[in-house]
Length: 418
Image (cartoon, rainbow, N blue to C red):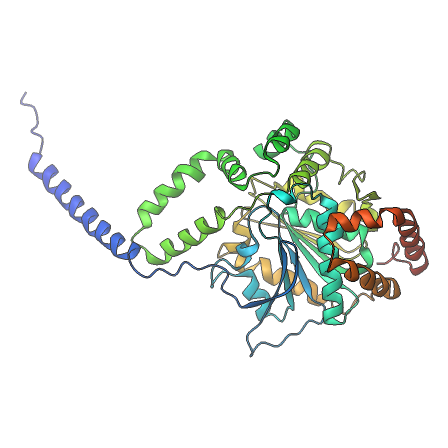
């Protein structure tokens, strides 16, 4: 029986056609990559209204045609890892623009770039130092008694701690992809952190290098983050909008400040390894972080497919705080997609806006006299002192202040506030 002939001519013709298609694609990709790409991030106008050491406070300006409908300002606190520019990554997918368009008076903390001199800064310095000074500044600037506080990832953990220590200054608390329960085996990151020799790492580096953290995050899912992503880029590099968004994301990913060493050490030891926050045993600046003192309304948003802060790490917090007005929202996305995916643009920011507006006039502020006196006291020292020096100066009064806070809260009924 005669063997069938291989249609060489057809094969060569097909290869020639494919080569021509790829040649045209490469030519188009070359034109795209050499064109004037719009890859700027964080383009929404803002004003720096407060500075302390490396830390800045941004106040965003809405378009003149937009009416500011909420009196209570919203202060957003991002993580120390990566940058707050994620919330304003793309013009069409910007949480910042979405907030402003809905009448939010928006402030955001820019943690800046820590240097070697910042290696001794602790969680106390960030929460009771920088954050508290910023809150007091906003209270005075806006002539209000409380703020709405929103924290993202590690910044959300800071906001939970702050709200427990300073409940009289927070009207509503919003946490997003925020790790609070570290006793979970969901996600490789939590397993790694349990066994990390953080003392050796920080004693060696001083600060936790941002580039090293980036490399670690890539290793959590190397096939997707180090191979698939770039294959996808090659397949779409003739698509200008895709290329622009890809470059924007890469710029954000590799803009990775170091984390102050003592803050990183304490975060790993007390939270990842001992789980003291959710167990109500965390001490910050000599004060007990009692989650039962978080009596203000709380909205907790997390992502179903988050490989950094899995649902188990985020969802428990609302069941242990003192508030009777709490809500958990789980979105069908990942850690970054919650802010930039086209789907969550219609869910994430609108949910927060509507939730805050529904509570704008519902709760009466507490602790007016104390807030104003504490505000004056802290602002006076903030202009001339670093947080660590301020903590040292006030340590001799810590006992009196703690007793004063407890007595004041008891008199004004903050613990029983709905």
